[in-house]
Image (cartoon, rainbow, N blue to C red; front, side, top):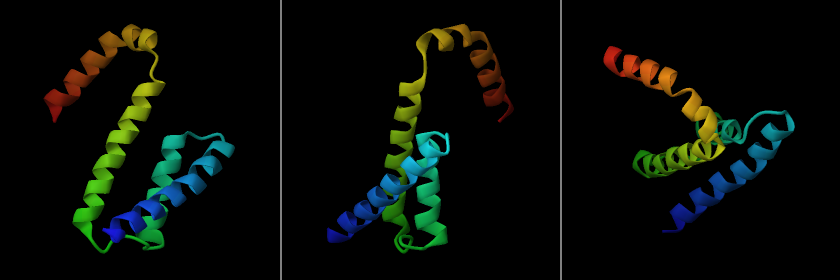
Length: 96
């Protein structure tokens, strides 16, 4: 159980460091989370021994990222783009 807390602590510290840095450079916070994940995973190798545990954290991270992207959407602009979104989205689904 303490392994989960240690990994969560590593993720949170990386996010606390990476997100303000990317915001200072004028980039989005989502990119900061992605940079933090890349740095602590493949680059430094702080985590990565247990792939099943990492998959659970990654799935939670994807859900949080989608929530954050959804919070930044403006409903009026989304409604204005509905024809393009449905048309191009449907085309992508049909092609794949």
